[in-house]
Amino acid sequence: MSHKLPELKYSYDALEPHIDSKTMEIHHSKHHQTYITNLNKALESYSELFEKSLEDLLSNLDQIPESIRVAVRNGGGGHLNHSLFWETIGPNSGDEPKGKILELINGSFGDFESFKSEFSEKAMKQFGSGWGWLCQDSSGKLVTLSTPNQDSPISSGLNPILGLDVWEHAYYLNYQNRRPDYIKAFWEIIDWASVEGKLK
Ligand code: MN
Image 1 (cartoon, rainbow, N blue to C red):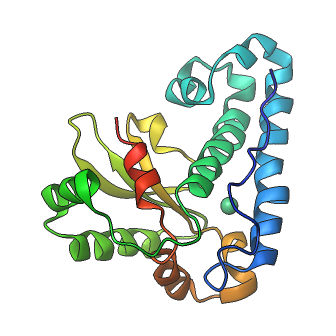
Image 2: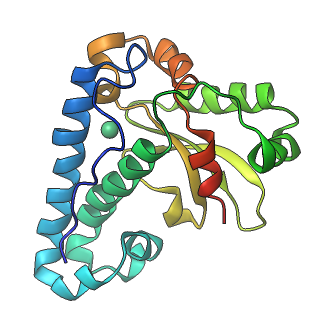
């Protein structure tokens, strides 16, 4: 079974003014689709790998045939990262985390504000294209990090529960070079219930 573009649970204009409609449309229908197309193309020569889940492929990159490993890392990572991104943002958000996810954030970072500044700094300081992340490590603790390109934290044994795309294609139309303003706007559209649902 080839990989397919997931539908969004909201319309392209639903995240305005934080993320504009045109950016959402191009980002989802063109950029995300291209990662999927490239992943499917790479897997065609090893079609038994279509049976494996995306998580499985990216968790065991060393087991992917060398001739397609980079394509799976980039296309598969791009597919997984964007799918998680769309799921953990949404309209009518702008809430602060509560309940279990808040307890974990407080236990791991001290408080929500400390977490916010740590995450924002990681996303800000990722040089060039990449992602800022909130992940759960193998002990269950939450950690922040950034990854370059489309590398997924799953490949390092982490469970990503919230990711911020800091490739310029994610914000350039509306924010141009102002990555800090885009990162600030991100906090207004996080769907914390969905983030909590990613915990293992
Ligand atoms: Mn992107």
